[in-house]
Image (tube, rainbow, N blue to C red):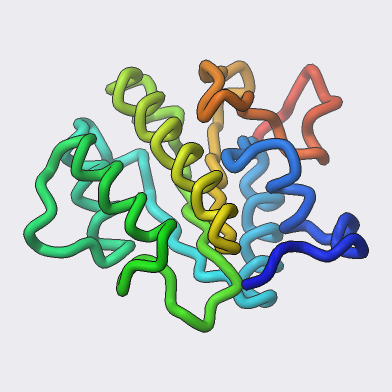
Length: 177
């Protein structure tokens, strides 16, 4: 996929990636509408239920399976970084060649972040770093993170902040449903 064109600034994918590669969503219907739009525009959307994760191993196993990481891949954050980096640099797995890009969706991520905050933060940082790297190769990679906790916050990742999506950013009293 080539870089965005100047007229793409109105498109959802451009708006989601313009300032960060990791975007928070509180309202599930808004997340669903966004992922449907991305799917309709050729993105490979991999949705994972983070509420079932209780450990680092759960995250690594599910992401590895969703992105078809090689069987020999170790179950460590270093191996996760290596394999996600391979996805960014056109490995034979992770993103189908005909796809516009990859959208990794974590639903109920606040549940996992409460269970293992360190891994949650590191995983998002790895994804952001490699999404930026993917952009250098003309690949689009983003992560949409759903949280039922309207007060959830993460430290900056990839030297970039994690921001609320545009539709919810202005609402200090975010109402999740």
